[in-house]
Image 1 (tube, rainbow, N blue to C red):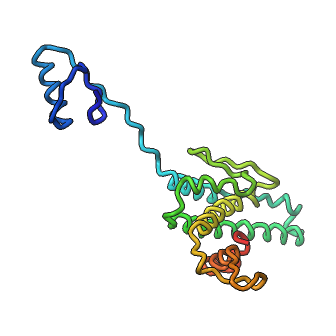
Image 2 (cartoon, rainbow, N blue to C red; image 1 turned 180 degrees about the horizontal axis):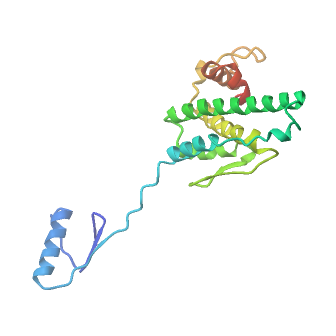
Length: 210
């Protein structure tokens, strides 16, 4: 018999009008008094999974903090190479901008209670699925150049999670009519893009919510 997660033997127990705890006490005490062996086996209890969302967010935060490893020599042969130097610092600024975007999006996802761990896991299909989460760690498959991609992949995943959440919770009555549609026809996509422009500003919204 199973009582509160415990399997109790012997199994020939007659428990009528008893609470589970009283029943357990009655049979164990009686068996001991009769000199019978009694096995009380703890039923395995599945360990509570680590909060999936918290684990993913923490992993993503650590992932974007990695140094990009941009190689100066890949852009110019010497510091006197003005064109190469300009290209290098332009690339570096872009990578830094992606860091700022990722931090803002992380905070937004973290603060949205409606974005669950499962919803965030599903968002890894973004960026062609090159950034993946196996339940314990992140893995990234480089497309062309790691330094310019890895933070962008995080932004894409987070933006996808936010977009999906907003799409599922959008109140249609609050959307605006689209000029290209017949009067009264609502354009949900435009309403969502407007929402993200107002929330994050045009720059970030144009990069991740267009």
